[in-house]
Length: 283
Image (tube, rainbow, N blue to C red; front, side, top):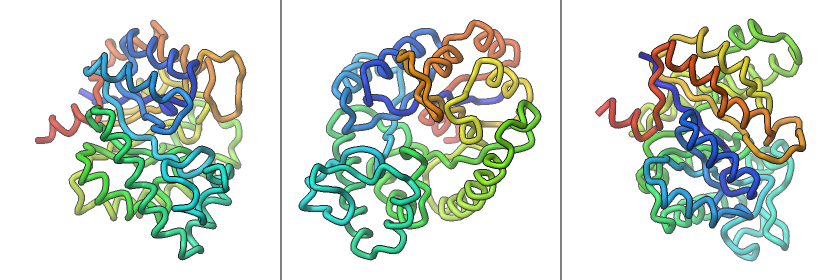
């Protein structure tokens, strides 16, 4: 039996995203969501998590393209006067790596976001990062001890399967190859760092090479093709009709409420679970 975690990112970012996540959970495929604690609709998301304790919620750490938890005067090298992180993950990544003053400020901001999550009273399932900045070489070592301290069960290490992806579609081949190299190197390094940690990871994480395009047909294809003990598929669902390049979008929502995907899960004898379930199964 393959264990599959189906996660929705950006929980709390907007009402349209929250509603898509709620409906997908009620449909029965979505097993957990990653919460932006400073999102515009975070309170609504937190309320839903409290009312549905069987729905697992993790922390979607935001260190780019979003707002900080700490006031700007406490982290002046990370944010502007309004508390906004750099919108570009590439710009943020270079800045955080080469700027020594950023390192201590990053630690304080990461701690603050974990503390804000803890204040919700929700059980912390896992940790991941907006635009995958959590696997940045400066940031990942800061996260691990804090995540363990706050009781996280798992952490996302985005390691897609290029061969399986290209078997489905060769569109955007050049970009997929670049991403596979970058994320491949980072994921190997993170896995090595994780060796002494209590945090769980899955064997593969799908969503990087098809980010914003996790369509029904692709999900069905993956579930038939992959045979590993534990994998994670992450989505960017929304009820907003606008289609953005990397999500959130309605097509991801439709995949999470697809009768065909639901049938595939049953036919392939797949166990849908969360990082909490996965951690418990290994104990």
